[in-house]
Length: 255
Image 1 (cartoon, helix red, strand yellow):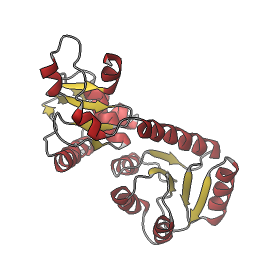
Image 2 (spheres, one colour; image 1 turned 90 degrees about the horizontal axis):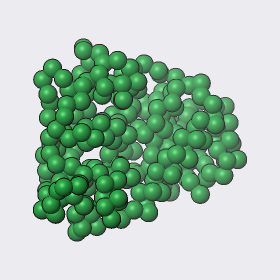
Image 3 (spheres, rainbow, N blue to C red; image 1 turned 120 degrees about the horizontal axis):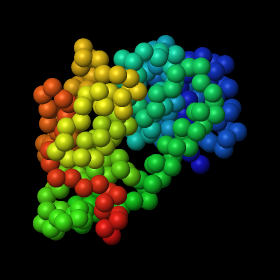
Image 4 (cartoon, rainbow, N blue to C red; image 1 turned 45 degrees about the vertical axis):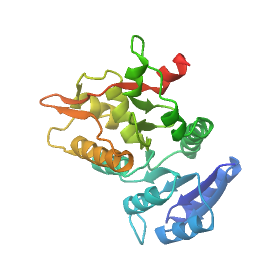
């Protein structure tokens, strides 16, 4: 049974959503503020946190940052703030889903079930250490030596792993970004295509959100794996993945 925490300061909305999700078969607890969420997490872990942004003691962005640093729970941001910048910030801070109020409870239920399916697939797959011991199979035409030099993009567990080093878990935004690049290694993906994939909107030349995402992702990968992420800016176009890479789909089909 999935363990859900609903963090919402509007008592009626919180109680209604808790009651609905409880009827759906989830184990649900409610919290009205960030500090109360902390106490609930101390009492027991959560699989999914439904998090409002406008909280009385701490904004949801700050709460998401703290949760992402200490918990493996998936985060669904549920808020009335629908601006593009709020959406981008929420996803970049580690939210898996961003829903704008008013929202049908059935959509919240569907998103929770989708997140649980994805996490269950990850739990059923071999751990990261297994990938280090058994390098992914090489693409067609590549030698075994080439495969040992390739990065692994794991689209089942949402991770990126260097040829030698620890696997790095990816947020929803990081996963979508890298999935665009690894589809055609060495080829530049335009900022327009990246923006459409991440936000559903045309690229704004005055926005630095894509560059900020890449900078944070590079730092994250290097800090956690000890390897520099081979994502390169292509002047006037966008970004490209310039290292050898295989995906979990390739690895599975080869096996």
